[in-house]
Length: 379
Image 1 (cartoon, one colour):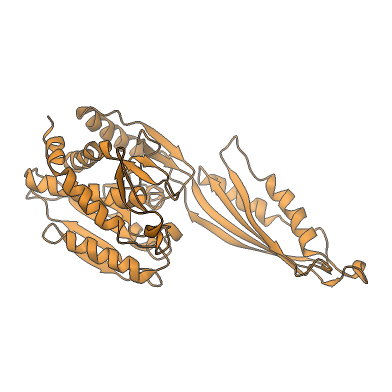
Image 2: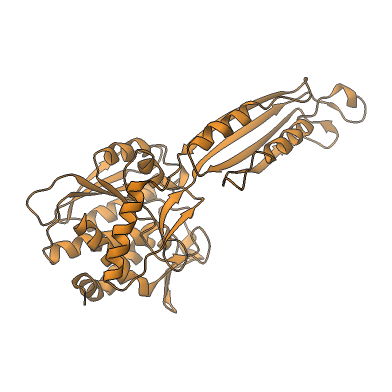
C-alpha cells in the first residue's frame, strides 16, 4: 500500500473527529465572533505543526496564514493552499441540521464547503511530518474569513501570498460524487440597476406619472439579450423591487443582477453593453453600479500542467482524477488571474453544498487527503 494511504487509513477516525469538531463550531460569514472562535480552534489544532498568523478582516472574522514546519533542509519557493473558515449557514443551524455519520456519509453545515478540505490538508501535512518526507517548498495555508461573501477583505492578502508562490492548491470541494478537480471557473460579478421615475395618483392623474417599474421592465428585457450561452456568458436578474402602492405610479424601482463570464475578454464586451443602457422614458433616470468581483479562472498551460501532475499522483493510489469547469467562483479565481498555476476542487467529495443535504463521502477521505500529501511532496 502507498505509505500515504496507509498513514491516512490509520488516522481516519482521528481526522473525522477533528472534522466533527470544526463542523460543530459554527462560523457564518456575518458573525465575526463565531468565525473567530472557529479560527482559534483551528489554530490550536496546528500547534507544533505550523506557525499561525492572524490577519484582521473587519467587519468579518480574522484570516489565518499558517506556515507548516515540514521535513527537508532547503526550501525554495512556496506552495500556497487556500481555504475559508466561513460558511453560508446561520448560527443555530446545528439544531435542525446536526452532525451525522451514517450510510457512508458525514453530514452537517459546512462539512463539504469547506471544512473537510481544511481537515484533509492538516492531516496531509501531519503525514509528511510523521513519514519524514522531505518537502522542497515552503508550505503556507491561508484560511479566509469572508470567501462566501465575496472575499472583499481577504483578496489583497490572497494575491500578495500567491505572487510569491509556484503553485496554489484550493481546498474547495470537487465536482460531483466523482470529486473532479476544477481547472476552470467563471468570473463572477454583479450590477444594481436603479430607476427613478415620477410618482402620481394612478387613478386621478395617471399621465403625469413616469413609472419606474415600467422603465425597469423595459431595461430587463434588454438585459436578457446580454446572455450568450454559446460563449458561456450568463446574465441573471435575480431580484426586483419597487413601488409603494398599487394606486401610485411607481417613483422608484431596482433590480439586482448577477453575471458570469468564462474569459476575461468577455468582461469588456459585457461592460459596454450595460453602459449602453438608456432610459426609454426620458422622464426617468437610471443608475447602474457594480463590478466584476472575481476574474475568471481560465485553464492556462500552468493550470493544465498542475492538473496533469495531480492526475498522475492520484493514479498511483488507484484513483482516476478527472477535471471540470464550473460557473461558481472561489479564491482560486484571484490566483489564476495572476498567472499562478492553480488547482481547485481538491477538497471534500460529496454533494449538497449550501443545501440541507450537504455531506461528504466517508470512503473518499483517505485517498483525498493522501493525494494532497503526495502533491505537496511532488511539487
